[in-house]
Length: 464
Ligand SMILES: *Cc1c(COP(=O)(O)O)cnc(C)c1O
Image (tube, rainbow, N blue to C red; front, side):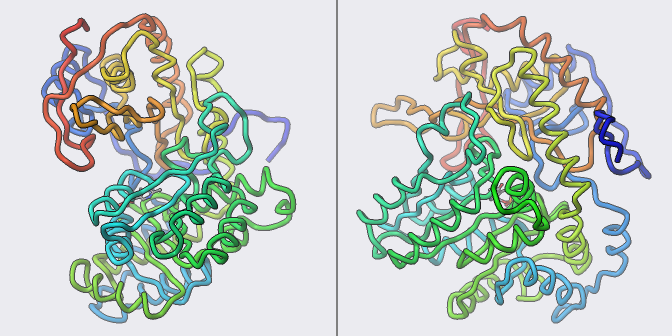
């Protein structure tokens, strides 16, 4: 590519199109009301640009679609499974590979076995399904982020790192009798999609060895993380993205992946580990709820596409486009004066809604206000990652807010073009006019776990 040209053109062209539809503002207001002001309850036909998640929303390549035709649907020992297992072993260096229908199935199996009352999990940040699967067993999940990484403004090359001092304190305090595992989430999804350095992962390995605790890598975005390592960490400039990913995964005792992210497929997950005994227990669980050990809830064609996706994701042109196009949105928003988590992470742009709407109280969910306004103005769907998602209640029923009130604009892989993103940027010009809003929403219904998926809200009676 000519280095003088600055426009980041997508490294693909489009062979099949999926129409999307713009509705009227009145239509969207009614749709939002019907959905209880929760975008998870909107129907996708009513969404123009869907930035709800990068999970399973990507476009597959021509090779993956061709691979679908080659899928072997045999119940046991399918060719597609053998291929996937080989690709995953080459990536992870782990001998025991279990296919699952998505990441949380792998989480339920592993953390169901490791968890239980009195058990403690330590992580840079537990992703929401990770935390839910851990807490469901009665165990406790502690997030150990460095204080400086919680400041949305500070530029840090590896803002997703776990705080090693905090980790050592907890390990020393609880020891291997209580600590079930250390989970390194790579990249750190819930904390801005920020990368984790190899040095941090090595140090976690050393601490886990010292205290005799298992190290799990939740590596849904291991390829995106490898891009950041190559760009930002000394000693990796001459290594391939695949080798960097492998080097990190080899540090872990187990690897959990939602293949709906860097697996570049619409459905699928993986659970990998080094320990044979543990793998036997996991396979028993897999067979009870997911399927036999050589398909785990996936069709042969799904496994074929995943095997191809796990190779394509390390293509340097793809990864460059992926990380730079996300940064394009984030950098332009910042230029407009929208407070974004800085630097921009790999798969999403996170907006600091507390700073954007300083007059809206935290217990009226400023992030949800931004989410709803983006939909009303532009038909854009995204998700709150703040007190709606992570808030808890004290004994008096008062909200214990999350540490940050963020909104995530997640970018599906290979789906939207730069003009879609320019449209989103223009919608934010109208958001800026709402900065002195004073009221938000209150919850009218919520379930016990993962409430943000199904909760219903209404505008707070304070105004709106
Ligand atoms: C998406 C995700 C999961 C859960 O995977 P699903 O495929 O959605 O079940 C777990 N951890 C992280 C970091 C994720 O991003």
